[in-house]
Length: 422
Image (cartoon, rainbow, N blue to C red):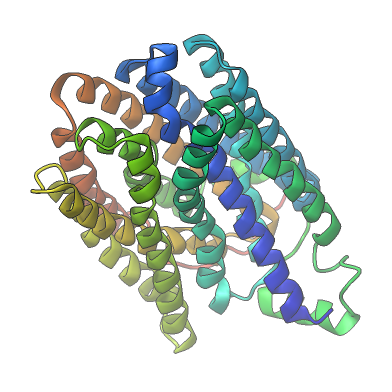
């Protein structure tokens, strides 16, 4: 198989893994109006359940990154995907808040492996000038999954029941695992590549598939300004996305009077905007890099633009109509898309492939920790004051994240592998 075809095939698999990942996690938010009635869940209960998921995701991010760097992308990704698919199916057996918490805990721990593994795979297979767009495609599966989840899950629940909706969506991951094990291998070992193609990947991507000693890379990464800058930036910005993922269907139901059918028909629109932002933001960033601009300018300029668009969230709660509210949500999510593709590309720009998953896991841990805290607060605020204050918070937080990106991260420079080796 020609190298470019294999690259696109691998990128398709990475995109699909993220789609499935988000369908599995988003299924609960689509069904929460139904589960509120059937299981007697309150807004506070839902906030607690979601917070548990994010806390588990926080722990899982760092553990997944270190372990994937240790055992390799192929095996590590397959294990995480198989177990999160099992956790998704188990949601069908929810009997109340406690069992739902247990299943969300397992789902959060295992879904965390998607981004460290996927980012590492792209760093190994793609050259720097193409990574932002590749990251946009891979990460774009999150928005595609969020787009697909409302109509798919609503259809399954209306045609059968909410339990069958969890089972059907969970099975998708097991199918993906089989395809991944058939197709994926590191470039230096892939049976479908000839020696010339392997040399080309090694030259273009500059990525080593070497497995880092367990824990040693993390200790060295924690001594770098780049890691702390990315951790702070993701810590501040990621709660914006978590809010739109977990709370948008509930907002449309509680504040705009949407039925489950309405959510299935319209709740996917803002996630289209996210994907458009990722594709455009990644393409523009890569184009700037290809034209000779520094990674600092190419990545950060697009991300600052995205942060300014995220401020549109402050207009949502006060919008005159549901349609206007969705438009403002689309402005904010488009901005997050521009931001998201490039924050992942920055990891590939800065860190060697041998410690890539560990770096993404570390910054993802910071992002998930803040997301868990913010999601818990949202449950408390919505239960007492409604959604207005929350939309103001997600809009203004983006500006603080933008300041951290510009002033804390510093110049984007690749760390030499020798600086992180034993």
